[in-house]
Image (cartoon, rainbow, N blue to C red):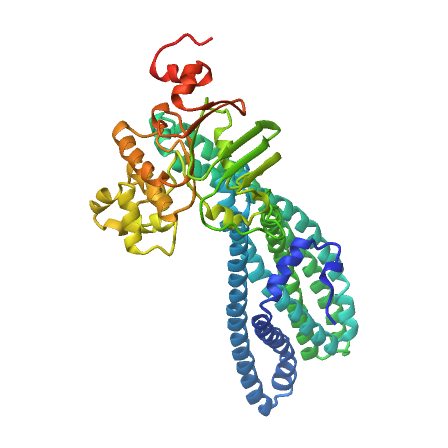
Length: 587
């Protein structure tokens, strides 16, 4: 009959999930349990062999037992060695496999969370949870499961030995055990609390390192090396203080257990020695009993240390499941509509969008026909990027509805929706991989010919041919080995090869020099052909090709039309135009 784990009130549901992961490796665990039984059994037998060794060999001078007992000892310790190797290997296999699956599950869930989650969490903190926190659980699974099972079996085996030898003295020896377990529980709570703070400090340090390494150019440019060093030293000092608190709590359990164990053994020697002197026990029986008691207190002491590891692991488990249990803001419909590839109309029907208690977009009504190019302009913070971020459901509308061909995108399959959309952002995001793989990121099934065609259409083929390994050249972290214009053209090639019917260009040329902008602009013209396109533009000179220009101010569309019409109105667009191309007194 199995125990219903969920009925134990002190175990949280997230801990049950971890236990389920452990139980899934039941076959390997079973083999490891056999090995643990062998280790525990040989420990008990080795204690028991002391009695015949003393009584039969040294006291009774039995020559036959002199031959048998050494052979028995060799067999026992050979089996013990096999058991120790087997349990360590098998339990490490279980621990590593559980951590691999837990790490995969954590990463899988993080990738499925909405964009707002990544805006709230620090990159370094998330990295720390996947690496450091999960490793803490690995130590718990590998050591605690192994150690607790082994030590419990050992305690059981030695208990049988001592009760078999001298049952009344065994009862007296066991009186001390309940007292011995009290510091394990009390100090364990302290260890868990401090351990969580340590993990948080490590995560904060990881985030700090990620920021300062990624922004090292700015650190050097502003001569802030000394400032950043001091900040790092402060973080390591905080971590050191927390770790020492943890060490104090963990270290206290051992001396307490040693003292209590010493009390128990002292009592056994005093009382048992008296009974030996009086002739009640034989010397062999008592020495065998005493050896078993000494061996018995050892696994009890180890359980104290294992409890400390358990508490550290549970603290890490809580942090990991804080993320795994986080729900995405973007929900998939129960019966989603699959959007098929093809030309699309995009409609904003009285759309409003609130972000962090601020109404970013207000009552947006917009109908964009298939193949139409719409430019969005306005001052920074007006809501342009928020508007286009609603189309791929990076965020959901707060009110109103956003429709593609009359279908509310909240009813559409998220994967099929995003399959209709290609994006080129102001900051080109590339991966530390080959040029080929970065372009093919838009279509993993693309052939070499298709990749080359996309590179040519993006005006990237010529500079790629100048690389030592051409398409197989590694581009470095975030494309660090490329210029701004080169990175942007590879991003355009990536969007081209996706061949999505809806295109979003978020200030794709604003950070480029004149020559790079000219080439990128030509590449963008190839990219926009036949696609429903939303262009966020800072430079008004780059949107002359737009079918319509929308001026967005304070979350509202305040003007709409072509360039000449909007200039003639002398409204908001006219102000923007004059700010860029000529001085004007703006009232």
